Length: 237
Length: 397
Image (cartoon, rainbow over all chains, first blue to last red; front, side, top):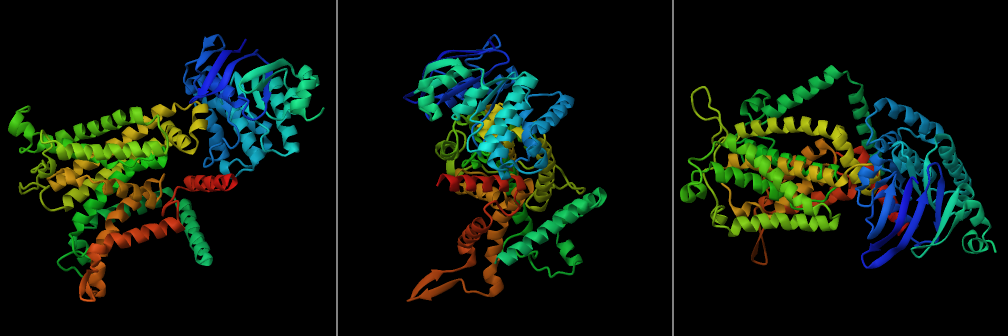
């Protein structure tokens, strides 16, 4: 297993956000976490990327226990998160944003090559190359956030709500790119989504979260056909 | 109004474009000429040469105070603003107690170089007072260390909390200095502080009561500091600071050790603040606790915000203006021949520009902040961030 989340709990002050979450992600997989607002999806992701400290439980990555590791060191280990919503640096140009993604790397020649690769994935970013991140549209910002995370050459890419606030066409497009990143580059992806339909049809496996607990897990296909999931998250009875 | 603003914007745009198109040699030439101009500023001869009237004091009118003294005061404020600009402008940490570091620098020099310091008169810890130049590195080092020590617990806090704790820090330094008879001698202070070294060709000391040499010294320090900060900001360290300011979470997710770099910014700023304090103590020759009031911290912050946080030249402009404008306002009354007092219903009211200058200065500050919230000489990037936050606030509302 590339990532093993073993029974973690997490407190926000006195409110318990996670009640023992266990998630496994194997090399080369796309794994989705789905659930309603406040179910603990983003919190789980923050526990993996290191923005939030867990109260108990373990997180192992690539054979290393990273439970107490600082967030910036996890990036060097190979975990990179694209934050939710407007997580780009608003005052930096698209170019500078992408370069920030490669902050931990020193191999200048390869960075240029990877930038080219990201610009091929997201041609829109090439058009906006010199523009400030904050002036991009919502969809472009989302692309920039994903592209920036790719610039660190992560072994595990964490995507927090990549479809948030996007038009249906763009959602389709961004999920196609996610699949491409996974299939062509072999990048393992852990994905948090409210758009369960898209997430489940793209993910190899998925977990359903409710109020800080995992209530269901299975392959993306199976969960798509699960009547309870259909009822609660897919909007079809 | 909008017309004036667009025209002004076009004008500025034109100037900056023309500047960018100039060959490098002429750009350096222009900068050198400007630097020479700055060195010439407090010289009477310079104005006589230009054919301007020179009376008891030099024009550009700070009529009631010596030009060189005013310029030196501007200088140490510019240095402070440069230091605080690293903390507030680049790393985006709101520090309301920056003058505390200035106090650390000033007191370090004072206690070590003054023969009246209790270290020598009562405790005999050291044989004899240090020369100013020997105390200077220690002053910088101690204020740097104060920055690290304060930053260590405090920089885990964000935003408002950070502002409150730093505010407390500066007050703490002041109250310790005031209450502590043990070394700092409270409001009676420490006189006869050592001066920078150097003698003229006739054997008299360069750094005496004339403020000009001090101004030249601090101008040189500022120029050096500009180069240092510019290089720092363009390095990985600077990029990390800007990333932290723009979005701390995102910076952390990109692998920036945010805590470490925040302490760095804090300590660098503190060191520069201490440097400024040491220079100031060397010129003024006397420190006591009542110098280090809260207003001073606020004024430095005002300098950074007025000039344009996140831009070195903005900080310099701001530091200059917060001292120069009130000084200049002193003379406004003289220029227009206004009376110092008016009598309303028999009661005398003081309307001398000297005493009301901070009122006018406050009005100027408010007007600038309404029309140019990003500061007079803003960093383009930071202006974009401000706009972004405005948009976010509107979406949130």
